[in-house]
Image (cartoon, rainbow, N blue to C red; front, side, top):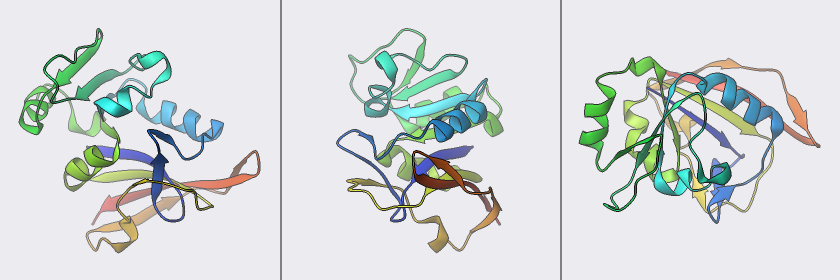
Length: 162
């Protein structure tokens, strides 16, 4: 299992239900990494997707405790146990946790890799990702060159369990 996330210098990931900043290069990277894979997200994250529709070309799994929440072309799980039962039929290396904050925190300990887009800047975020540089069980194993979208610099990184 992996997580994929974009963070600012303070590990901020969003504000008011949206991303801190939308970067075309990061969205392309996200698509390339998750296409044909299984993506797991919370209900609030699902509702931020374009048209509140599942992302095409991927198995969309949504976590929601709301018994009335159902969406066509999505697998809805009501608990961690229910999710892990569903995931038994998939290769865990193909599973990506894509947010939001609570889902990242719940499933971070189960992830063997974290694909982190590090955005050079600090935004007014009210949602954060765990600072992986402070975790002793992870190491930074890869870092891309610097990319620039509209004056915003960022790089792709990968952390792996030691």
